[in-house]
Image (cartoon, rainbow, N blue to C red; front, top):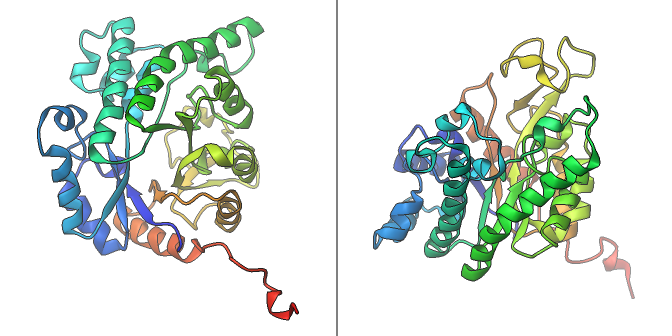
Length: 332
């Protein structure tokens, strides 16, 4: 059987969950990846209210939809980040609190522990999300960055996330970092270092998303080959990048998405430059059987038309691996 095709609700959190479920069913999806914001999945309610988690499942079942994961990217970002006023806009008030950076980080870490427990109550086995990074601002090495500063950043990540991952282990859930600029891991090399930092413990793996690699010049198929046993979840998203030089490059020039001078932009699946045929073949080779979750982003396209089209495109591309050699019929 081909993998289920789901829709990540993060970009739809302005709508009530029931509305998103109705639309997703109409668009042709098999299920939803629930964002832990908007009204889609509330971590604290899941822990405190009897029947809340079951109610979420029942609501999806009403529309013939499944759930395989809940995602808490926004809170996870605050665990390792250097906190500033930007974080207030993405964090629940209970996590932002008084805004004091060290306290925000502590509350974010506790909320991620609660997220693991809430996932277990819902009956899902993976939580995709972000980690944040204390060293992202050191990306470009001038003034020269001593190796010790980078080493300290990975130690900080391990020190903050190992206690969180202990809770993931306790409840039988795994955390899947979406390898992404601004996170502790943003390409193949930094993903290796992140794994090493937490001593490759099984609770920590990756949410694969090729769109964050392509425009950087990172081999997004090689990532699958290198980390096949650590891909716990997969986002399907496309990205376009220019074949010719542009006024702004990979770093974006402080321009908004969709600006004509940008070198790259996220696009609806099939309208960018990611070779999904090769992605699916590589996922087949490493034996990934989880959902393919469409994270729909395209500043130049209506999202409902885009989500419907993306679902159909991915369903056609999502073939199961062969169980026999193509020339087996000639064997004697």
